[in-house]
Amino acid sequence: MLKLNDPSLFRSQCYVDGAWIGEGADVVDNPATGEVLAKVPRFGADETTAAVEAAARAFKPWAKKSAKERSAILRKWFELIMANQEDLAQIMTAEQGKPLSEARGEV
Figure (tube, rainbow, N blue to C red):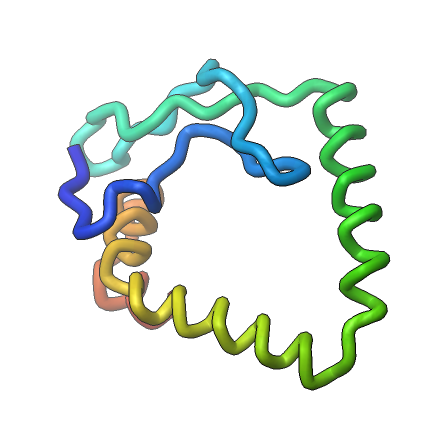
């Protein structure tokens, strides 16, 4: 099992319209060990349509934000990603079997 500094980063659900949804169905294996890393939800046409519609709704208020507001939000997102770079790289390495150094660079 992955040992992360912040285990909440590893979710087995999809974030749609402000909520984590979906039950695990498909298995993601660690290609190096065969260990089960996670179960991920299968989304059908209805769930996919709901996700696309939610994204379209979310875009409208985003488009109304100024460049400065959007920049601040994206900067905060970048800072969160970088603050969790090691955990994110560990997840990518386990899922994809790539070298940790390469995963760190990709994050």
